[in-house]
Amino acid sequence: MARPRIAVLGAGKLGETLIRGLLQAGQVRAADVTVTAGHAARARDVAARLGVKRAASNAEAVHGAALVLVCVKPQQVGRVIEEIAPHVRASQLVVSTTASMSTRFLEARLKGRVPVVRAMPNTPAMIGKGMTALCAGTHAKPSHVAKAKRVFDAVGRTLVVDEAHMDAVTGLSASGPAFLYIVIESLAEAGVKVGLPRAIATELAAQTVYGSGAMVLETGEHPAKLKDEVTTPAGTTIDGILELEDGGLRVTLIKAVVRATQRATQRARELDS
Ligand SMILES: NC(=O)c1ccc[n+]([C@@H]2O[C@H](COP(=O)([O-])OP(=O)(O)OC[C@H]3O[C@@H](n4cnc5c(N)ncnc54)[C@H](OP(=O)(O)O)[C@@H]3O)[C@@H](O)[C@H]2O)c1
Image 1 (cartoon, helix red, strand yellow):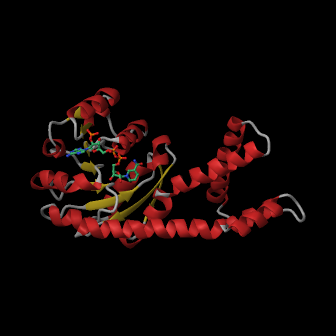
Image 2 (cartoon, rainbow, N blue to C red):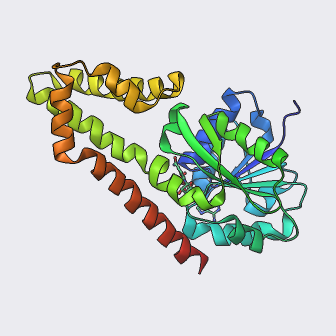
């Protein structure tokens, strides 16, 4: 596969994670990556750490790049798109990770029929265990989506969804790690309560969540079936489940995702207006 030139506009936490993933996967050579940041010092640091190039401006960075990865915060994206709009062509692909920013917003500001793909990854991408949902803009063809998918496959799993689902993705898999850290923290706290040293309790809790997630993905079984397999008659687990149901864990998690999704929708409307 020919290695494309890539511009990463906003080489912050996510931008750097994606570059590392692409380099490790051999999808791109360091010499073919150009980064920008808000502060020149940040771009210099990333360039030095990863051996990539840095550009003096976003406009300069996109010249000759087959793929333009926009990894800036929502409050910066309008300005960044304005800067690159006169220079981006329909032969290039713009992939935006900016939360709550619609493809419609980006397309309206880019000139011509520039293909745009929107992505919503999550923070476990930093260790190659991310979950990313992608959706295509009006001018993005399946080949553009496939190209964007390869980028996020380098840092975890990737699904393609309709853009209408992106707020729900934000509420579930983008906010989800925070919800699960609370679950892990609580399980570890419980371990301490029943006498385990904290470090052991935390490792038991984290690996149990990790392994359970992997079981769902790798067996393809319904989580309820896997739960039933752990729950022996008159055993220990059913007593614990009784407490979970009594405490409303299920409803609480559902409500957490619903609220986070509603907030994502609200923020998308604010940004679009
Ligand atoms: N981190 C994740 O795992 C994750 C997951 C899902 C979605 N996202 C989304 O991805 C975007 C980036 O997130 P992040 O966590 O990587 O944030 P971040 O670490 O703050 O990175 C943003 C980067 O944008 C740079 N920047 C600011 N203004 C710029 C400009 N005018 N031109 C070029 N670069 C500019 C900043 O530079 P300075 O550092 O010099 O200020 C910073 O390096 C956000 O919209 C976020 O919602 C991130």
